[in-house]
Amino acid sequence: MNSMSKEGKSLWAAFPLFLVLFIDGMGLGIIFPILNSIIVDPASVFLPHDTSLHMRNFLYGLTTGIFMLAWFFGAAVLGDLSDLIGRKKTLMICLVGAFLGYLLSAIGIFTYSLTVLIIGRVIAGITSGSQPIAQAAIVDLSSIEHRARNIGFILFAVSLGFIVGPMLGGVLSDSRIVNWFRFSTPFYFASLLSLINALLLWGLFREAFVPTRKVELKIHRAIDIFISAFRKKEIRNLSVIFLIMMIGWSGYYTYIPMFLLKKYQFSPLSVSLFMMVLGVGFAVGFGYLVEFFAKRFLLRWVAVGTMAISCIASLLTVAIHSEFLAWVVVFFMGAFISVAYTVMISIFSNQVSPTQQGWIMGITGAIMALSFGIIGLLSAVLTDYSANIPLIVSVVCLGVGAILKCFNLQT
Image (cartoon, rainbow, N blue to C red; front, side, top):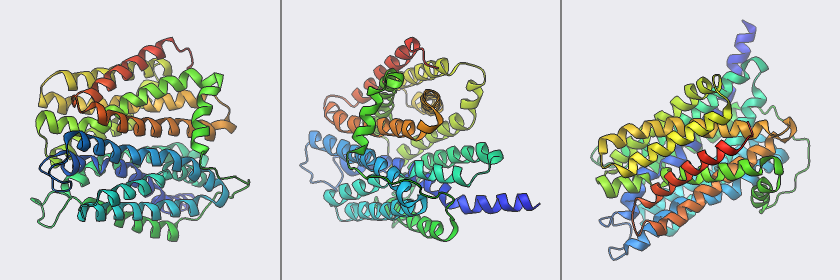
């Protein structure tokens, strides 16, 4: 009874940490359902009516890509900072930054200021590196017998954020649902949620981690981490495959809202529901399919198969003019890309010793963030020619990733 009581208190103390993970997942998806209507749609009043299509596409890519580039640089610094001053203080910095970032984004949209919106996205991106810190803090709090269960809760919290984020973006911006809802409303809500989470973290979380080493903070730390992935012989080939896979996935995730708008004239609410189905696929993949496949097949072949299925899903989306098929395929895209991602992370982890796990997770995070940032900026130019091109990039990269993994013997 006493053991159960302690575990209950431990879970309650960890609740703000799970909320951090939820907010991180939500923050990535909350903007996509409405960004088309704010920036790309010529009928939008956010930009001057004479803004060219080329400039609208560029600004869409800039607004999405700059968040991930800021995440790329911020995550490495925050990871080192958590080792220097502790998890709690670093997470408080992240949550206050999220509060300010979302608030500035809301103000930027409300006042039709692109500059303020982008500043808000930069601040939110820099402080979005809280996910690995929250994960580490949850592991610090977990007993050995409950560690696996709590890691499952971690994946559930992130998946729930991916589901709820797009839904909030679509619903809270639709004035037909409530007459005072605006495009800025989802960001006000996210800002308020971040502030509440900061207060909960401050009051409930008792740190179990004790900083034991001196860390020199470096702005270029993220670049050093990224480069190290291609210098180490044992993970060089794996890093190339993971980079190609993440470029493919980011091409799909970042530009599927624009594709839906231009091909099927989706409203923000329809985009939000579409992205929510993608999030449900994530939840199924993380919560069930990863374990199902990992118990039955070599991780190498799970990675090959799930990348190949994701490639086919992206190909069907772009090649077949069927709105119904797009709704069906997106669930499978979410389910299988989440398995591919998790399995690749596991393969990375298996290549290094227990003392190098922090370093290897930093590498995978850096590759992911930089892939999203680069594809956001580059594909903005390509969409001038066709909204299909980012998804074609997705098809090619996911296919190439699957083929290369066939010839990579690391398991």
